Image 1 (tube, rainbow, N blue to C red):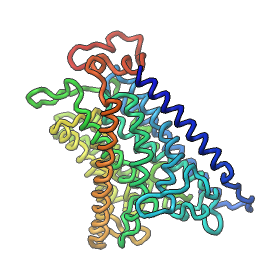
Image 2: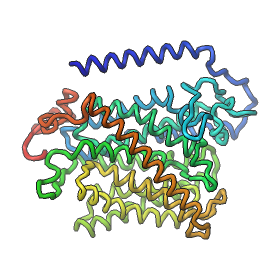
Image 3: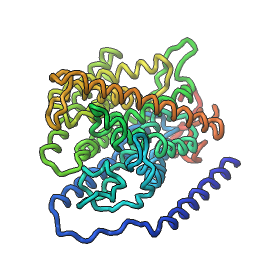
Length: 471
């Protein structure tokens, strides 16, 4: 009861703060640009960016289906609900301050202006684009609002990654609060270093991440790793002598369909990051994306057969996603052959990463750490190896470019990882000490659907809340 009252007060106060801020900034609202003559390229670029943003938004459905399918039926409502609310929370906080922190022009470490997009011109068509508030976006050539929507869906993806790794035992409102932390203190700050003109982007050899292997996937993965570790494993996952008890998902059909939704959405995620309707760039990025995902699935099939004796479908699904995550950073700078090799390594890595995390008793119900953290790191590193001077003069070690780009990639991987782990640890521990992180044992055994939401995903079926064994 106290938690509910406390939460209601927080919501009311937040609404008042936002309303008051709106009144304060009302006179500074962005002015509509004078109607320019029709520019076909400007229109095409804008439509392309918005269309691909819609594809990335659709990935929320894919994450919800994969995560719920790979978990037990007694927790399906909870997992679906988390995937719904995480985007709602991210939208509010990223619009309010996150986008400004990530892209405004303040210092090498974080932005300090541009809250709620105030002070900037929506059109970048002429002169000092966006009124100098967001100079790191000048290269895009699309309206500010279009760029915001595209970046918003990326921010939502980073936060969603956390959901899978902490599934089946985290308190709903604790996850709710951490999603807000991700949208303000974690994703935008590290994103500013890389995409917002921050210190990693201004190294002598700039750190590169075309569509977010680090900015989205590794950031979400590091935050998820800390959360999964602090929460501890699900009841019955590991025996006292260290053996692993498999806890199968309740609907592999749903998980498979979710994977295809994600794969489809990735054709917005990576090609959309061109920020322009450029036929050559879009085609190059698309073939690299598709090839890496497909090869990752095949590699994971054989790796799971060798490691487990059977071609495990959940491993194949995660192998495809691992290939897609890995190609996300280098997709604009590698050849199809490079993406082929990157996908093979990703598909193998994801299988053995799943086994590794089980070995050290970090319980990740859906393999999010293996897909997003491990292969986000691999994909970022692979750029320094396989960049083939396709565009922009970026050449990796294996194509005669020396070690400079590889060193920059390692620098970004390590520093972003350290930052996210530190801030995530603080956030998770504060939430644990104030609200608590984990549901009680009875609620976990009976299912979070009933305990947290008072409803079931499949009420017409018997046995969804059984407490026998680990089910």
